[in-house]
Length: 235
Image 1: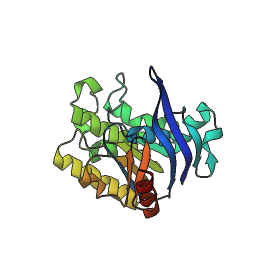
Image 2: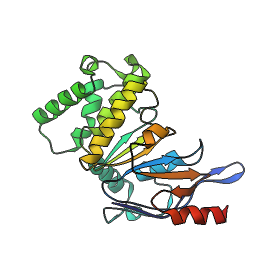
Image 3: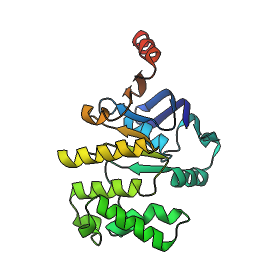
């Protein structure tokens, strides 16, 4: 599904150039459930933003289902993302001027789906996440946990081929977190490819592969033991 080749990302600072991703080579097969782990500031979210096509300032090659993302312009990348990717943000990214139901409906507006079908999907999703009573409220009327649930509902409603999640349960209590991870696991069984960033070993246990990032380098991949050995030599 995805192939990254020598992907790098840096920012210009007063001290010069700060690298947040270095020579990332990664293959993600359709149907995988991958966890990215590492300390704060390691580059985890930067890598997720590249995968999500939210950042276009990186260097290297990115292939998505045999399409050369690195050769696309910004509009082409945005269209590809809308068709294929769902994103759960750590900071929610809900639209303040839309209510809960409208926020959840947003990804469906980019699909060729009738109004009636969209309304039915939104109703089912509100019920699935137990937020029917919040459907007319706006984000500033919700708690952090409620906003996170809405963000997750919005990300999964259009059944994306790829679901990306940045600390998806960080603002949820333990029972809600368990329900969300079980939902992710079921989506994965149904064919959705999932990549999550988390500090939680419990959340990581729901997936089948772990990547570890440190100082912008990928230092561990449980699917590629050779990478771990090479990293030890480099270090």
